[in-house]
Length: 146
Image (cartoon, rainbow, N blue to C red; front, side, top):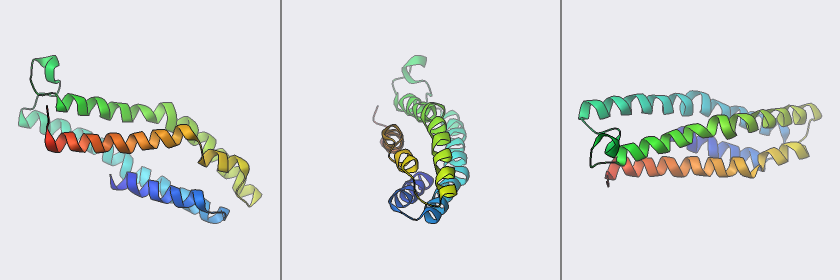
């Protein structure tokens, strides 16, 4: 969660800057949040969550295995939905963003292509969805409503 929030704050600052050097440094910092917090954190949460469910006797697959509790199954589906954003949205648009950033660094100024990459609506909605789904998963883990 800290990595997601940190990356979001840093990219918002990069988006607002008109200095390509600052933009380049902030996007590198955002990449560090992904590499050192978001990716390993997400993998660690999954592994330890599965181990905890198994050790705690929680029904991972809910109604599919005849249980009455389904919050863990819903959380797992939401986690997989977030994970699906990586190959379908974040990686392809990330390559386009990287090219636009390289072009802008070579030009020495924030370019129209970089601005367009920063304002990609699909990426914006994917990141909003990612944050929302993580919040829902946290609520499900705490409240265990069903």
